[in-house]
Image 1 (tube, rainbow, N blue to C red):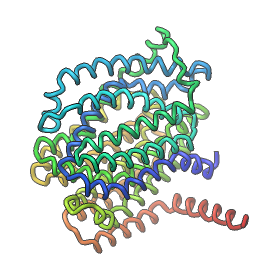
Image 2: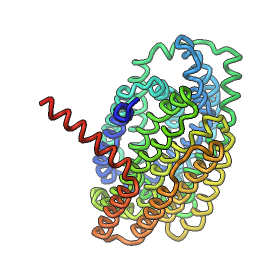
Image 3: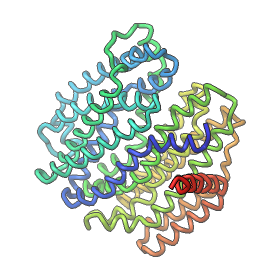
Image 4: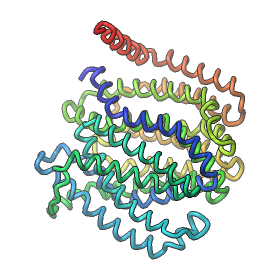
Amino acid sequence: MSTRKYFKSFLSFSIGTWLRAFISVFTTPIITYLINPEEFGKSAMYATAFGVINTIVLFGTDQTFVRFFYDYEEDRKNELLWSCLLPSVLIATILSMVVLVLSDRISVALYGQRYGFINLIFVVNIYLSLFQRYNQLIVRMLKKGMLYSLIDIVAAVLTTVFTILFALISRTFYSIILGGLVGTISALLVGISQGRDYWKITRPKKEDLKEVLKYSVPFVPTMLLFWLFSSIDRVSLRQYSTFVQIGIYSAAFKIVQVLNLIQSGFTAFWIPTAYERYSKNSQDTSFFVRANEMVSFVMFSAGFLLLGFKDILFLLLAKSYRESSTVFPFLAFLPIMYSISETTVVWINFHKKSYWHILITTVSALTNYIGNTLLVPIYGARGAAISTGLSYIVFFWMRTLVSMRLNPKAGYNLKKIILITILMTTVALIETFQSSVVLNMVLGILGVIVTIIVYKGPFTLIKKEFLDVLKSKLSRQ
């Protein structure tokens, strides 16, 4: 496949994510005027708790579905689906009963007081999200990029519309949660309606269930550790700070979605592409090196642009959320380092050495825990952001070094990544503790210029592809 075809495939998966982020950028200010930071913080605690429950429910079976999707014949893919779903449905049922029985205690622990019906909504969301996860995976593995984007767009639009409508009725965190629930339902209906054959109910065979569990069980501790790794910031803020600081932190995450959109689109496109490429030629490392260069250039450039112009974006938020501007810089590392690591971690997955993920996530989570424990009591949301951003850098290097140990011939150019990471860390540190709009813009622009110089090859290739497409469009007119 040519570079242009790969790029088109990436775009087909990314269109929905781009539009979702576009919607988020323009609707987040509206929501911040309707819902105060304290309520916003409570919605973040809901999301944090839901993350761990969802991880346990999936039980790693979603990873099994991806790994064996191409190994099953077309008429047996529904057997694979239900073999993966059955264990998760059983776990979801058990956990739902626990949540409902301990409803009041859970509510007080998460939100500081009892809330009626919140845990019933939580339970409904567990089942809907489980089926939506497989809905997305089916579309992704079939490489139906436009359908994948359509699902994203429908979910984003309805989530936004209903969140605002609910907020106009009740300015509480219920509005955010119910809006998200409507979005999940709509996405599920669109996806299932287009892939009915894969959802044909069948009774899983014992041997298939054994195979699924054998592969998925090692992922459970890894997934739980990753949840811990990615949630320590909000847990620490809940322990050492206030709901207001959690709300400010969560608002900063909304702007990070601009980078998350690139990460989400790339991951959706990359996973099936990487597995397919490896299955055809397991010795071709150059493809993954080129992908790493391209992704590094795009993510670092986008990161510096956002660091440069973040103050303009945060001016759109309500005054009570403006502090989020100084929280954002280090949070930018989350999608940047994760996306780049997806191009280097592949050799761990190809060689089926999944146990390495446990060590990687443990070290990263421990780093984040120590950082949050030290910094959150002093700097609040900014401290949580610094710790989390730095731990994602550790996460990238752990993934990369272990992967290169398994395949020494990988040949990634790590010197470039080291240079730009140091530069971006310096810029993020400056922007976290000062608020000069002009200085931030200058630093961001200089960062982009240095990135272009360091990654001259990917920049030249992207520029050439863009000019070729532009010329072809003009010649048709």
